[in-house]
Length: 285
Image 1 (cartoon, one colour):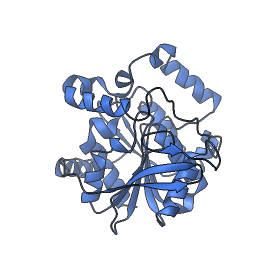
Image 2: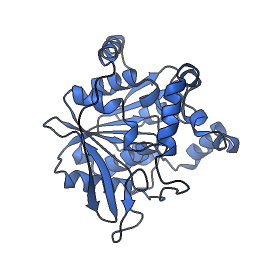
Image 3: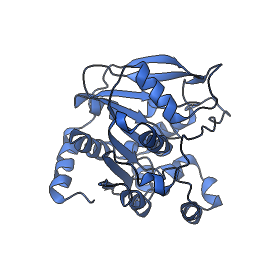
Image 4: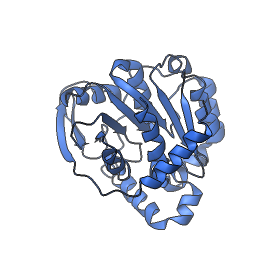
């Protein structure tokens, strides 16, 4: 459902209140899990946990604007480098290449976390959907941000080919994933995003093609009963608002937010608006 005007005003007020808080302390550590030595960041504390799943162009380092804001709001924040990204390394033993949902479940058990909020952006949203289908009892809420969701229905894949022709993939990553307004207005932020994208894994090393626990389809997406927010940018070339609406219409009770002018990396381009929308949602769940 669309957010009403009072809710939008609340989000605007929260955005004003969340101006660049100081970076909180967090623990960076490794968890030896089946088939992987997984690097994670954990702010600790007694707050309700929020887990962040990064895009294929990132790692746990990209949440520079989210970790301070969520921590300042009283939440415990956990972010990790998905298998093949950042400092996470494939380890002998265990199923290879494993699934992102199973890695997340193993990490949550390792940290003795019970129920938590899950935020996944872009390719991290694929893992978030798979996790919501696999372990719904562990989730307080689900935020799907700027994601095409990994759905494999042929009609949906055909839609993707129409809006992203082969030439699209030849574009530089920042052109594909940052909106033109942001690239025009924030050269320093664009350079920082590109730095994080270039260093998200070893040069020339593609991430392992992790499988999903489910063959994702809209029929399965329609079975999600976790409270869900679907968020995208008005200038997102991957997941524009009509694509987002396909998920909103299928997830019972799902809410939606469109951040004007933001591209595929709304968490980075307009962090105040992104953080305010996420905080407004998870505080209600």
